[in-house]
Image: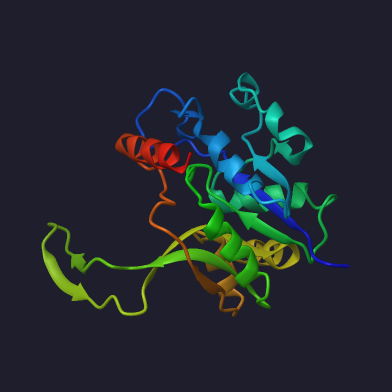
Length: 229
């Protein structure tokens, strides 16, 4: 049986750096909550059968928005945890009844609403042929400085071979569950898989696939979405 593709969007975070009254993932963007666009971008490719969105237990905000356009391809899971790692692991376990261990999971940030169709296609094509899986990433272009406690430069770091990780990060369900169970202190899925001794593939992404971190990023994301129409 051929492996299938599923999306998983952890959306249980508080967005503490955003400083808004509403949770960051629900911030208005081009007439919809930002989370809507992140889900829509994953479902833009027919290979992705279902997107599981992981929400905090007792979440009420999700129900206030209209998700009917996604039909049965969107499945909310109210099992978010205290960290991204916990939310992703809880979501994978909750989705296990619908997913085989050999199926591919594309874990995507709730606050990356500008994922391009070409980048998603490239990830599925390249990582899907890889025995480990892979992630979207972009080579580091800026000069990197290491600072001390007083914010003074103590070293210039070589950037050769450095990439900035993005999402989606695509791994098989069984491998990812095992990796996250064994690696508690990781900041992304690739880090957990690396801790098992594997080397995930880097698939070149785009700077347009930005992560909305600060309020000003919303304006940039809005322009990117409008340009894509």
